[in-house]
Length: 634
Image 1 (cartoon, rainbow, N blue to C red):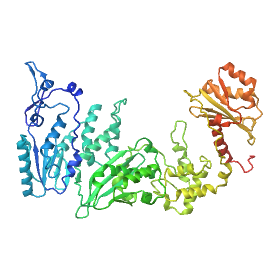
Image 2 (image 1 turned 30 degrees about the vertical axis):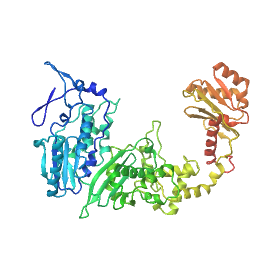
Image 3 (image 1 turned 60 degrees about the vertical axis):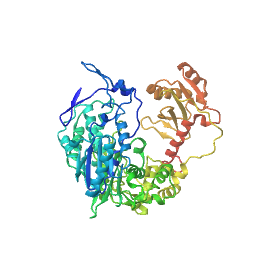
Image 4 (image 1 turned 90 degrees about the horizontal axis):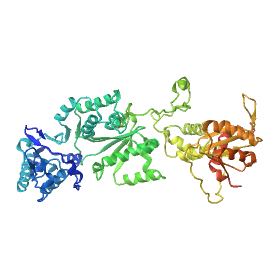
């Protein structure tokens, strides 16, 4: 078929998809657009050349013309030169034109396929450069399209950008196209818009977060639904492009300032440089959504990820700079990274990568770090994750935060707030306040006076500062409750033989007892219990904790088993228990045989055989010991 060209002429287009599938690919890389732009710093005169015919200037190897054959109603034809549509045409042409102008490449010429840009500091030198390039093209028998070429100008359109001395904009023609871009009606139309917008992402603050709703509806298996979130994102991207943002071309002689920030779900960065008047101008923007395990990192590590990703994105700007790269962050603890004595493996990798750069990290308050904040924080992008203020926020059985019920209580609370956005670092608190906060987290009813590691993990979800581990160790070591309840640890008796993993929930369960507990009266029946029957699903780790009497018979055990276990989950295929008298009784063994359930007894004097339940018993006992008196008789 024929398609119209800009000059009104027609161009023949042929579908070579089947030929392309069986063609061995030419892996010659095309140049990166961003790197081409970076060559233009300090240049004031430009000439843009467009090669005539481009691919049609290259002959097909003799004997291979038949592969390009196409049929019309008049006859069968073959190409003698490379046609448009062949998979290797771009790489082949780029390799040839690079070879022709290799002597001048990246000195005063940049090339992207058939578009050639010549740049110079002054007009006299520029004319010499243009003459040299045209002479090389003439020797190679490559022709220039005069109607599409522009000579000796100070503002030029190149690869969709308008280039002026030391600044770059989006080309006006592209802006006009965006203005008239209609609302997408299908996934393909959304993908087409995102493909266009992604080309100019370095001009757009917060690009990844703004376009998140649009990317979500292009995923496989997701029904196409265009709602207010998608419309808002679509309009926002259009408005950002229509605002005609301007980026400064990178100047390697000037100081580089890198501003980074992170939110719960994204990171952002802005690379900037100051002009001769000291005014700061953006060179490029960067933002990225966090994925997988990164979402669970403590805020300290997230802030460091923002710095690492920013250096990776702008590595060609930041390597070998004349001045130190100034890295601004609103997380003060990052300043102490270089002097930290102990690093985990991830931080060691960070330190090794950063060692190749000459940089300094400078703390800047969040209120003064607006530019990077805008890249990492956006209301419609963040998920609803509650931040606590020292009070317990509960959830219902569906996992939703019960905010309304606690609203009045939280407003009247006298506890100091410990939200990330209100206290950026715990070190600003007085030592007494820090210890009080650590103690509150350690002694919280849902914490259960846990050890140093787990207490430290809870605090690091929101705060970190030099000396935190030492203060936690001191506080935990001085806690009488923890000293009483912590479990004993000793070397294993011998190598354990693992049991097989169940294939389905409640297919295999383990039984055990916690005995010798203080008697506790059940309020409704008045029955006193002194033990707990523990039933654990070995696959999901879901557990039942049933009030029990140590003196119960095998019949009592069977009743509790049927009432609490079978009625909810059905008969299990397998039960693992210790060698208690009730489990070893003839009644219980007969019951298991009639129900078709296999009963396995743990090895004598070897509780590790039923280690999963035994370990849970230790945790439960430790938790209970924290909330009874010293004699453990209440």
